[in-house]
Image (cartoon, rainbow, N blue to C red; front, side, top):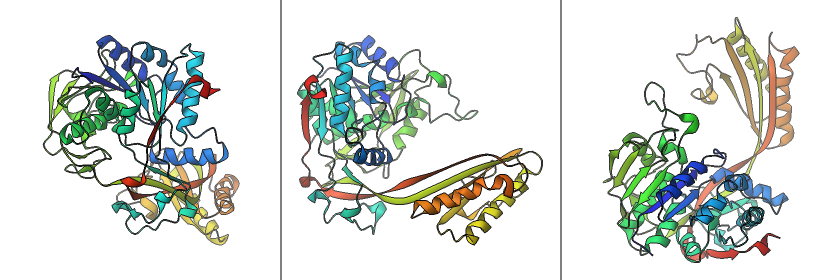
Length: 459
């Protein structure tokens, strides 16, 4: 435990983020010296559901597929300089992820690397799934445990902190709250009490600012002519400097693109907060209504004033269920009168689906005219006369069985010769869907556990 400034960098904001993003962050942490940690956030609700489905057929899979690629350039340097890495890349299989990381450690000549896994979030098939109340956003939902593909609870920062106290250099979790990836190192470093609500709130706020990677350094923020951001191709990922009293400064590595200013930090601060006065997390209820965001220098923004209240008695669990099948087919029309031809193709598809008795919910998009605002009802008012030089027609059909979805998208292919003139570039796919619902699990039903693994476990 220490009162020294702690720096926490974020090298990934989601599964699919840039693989070279962690490098400059690690360079900056090493150059700054002093205590530091790196978080790699790669897990979303749908990502986890897909990982759970993958593990059903491949028991050794089910973790972040890019985990080794993310770790390879940085693992040795972080170990050498005492920078622990914390990631939720374990997804549905933290133990499998740890084995892959230990195999990489052997390859890199790191025989003594200490890897910890945090388990206990996966409650599929357990008694913890019985008699649960739905989360308010899924009010009225009824849970049938027999149909569950995956069920994972958002754990908090305490197990991560425990792993770090045990000397872990790499901590791999399954489902936990995103801010916990940063709060865990703070708890281990500063030794904050589990009921020091204001400091826990500050640490959670810091983690929330870091969790989406380049969103807070100008990436998702950018809007040319309105919010200009330079160097997007080399955008720097964020670093938080946290003091023992909970004060936070957000910055990024020198020489990287993007920016950190009051606007970028404020946007990320408000991102996905259902209630700014009561943001529920496993560790604390965060209140940001009194927060001040102050620019101290270029790319250095201080954030203060977080307040906390006792953590909620329940934890949110994401439950994944079968969601039927989605069929998609696309075809392009270009040149003079292309909109009229695309609309004729759309009417033809609608008539064909009706004629063939293909039950299911169908949607048509005129990409280039409308594909977001129209909804399932079609083109909204005000866009009737828009005539772009090319249009891509998209059919999407949601059904309960694969055969129906395949028959529907085949009708798009048939437009090559049976449809209007000039159609081309047909692509189609049929995939099974996953539906997610959220339920509230009493804390006492859960037993998170930390396990240190060695190179022998990777054999």
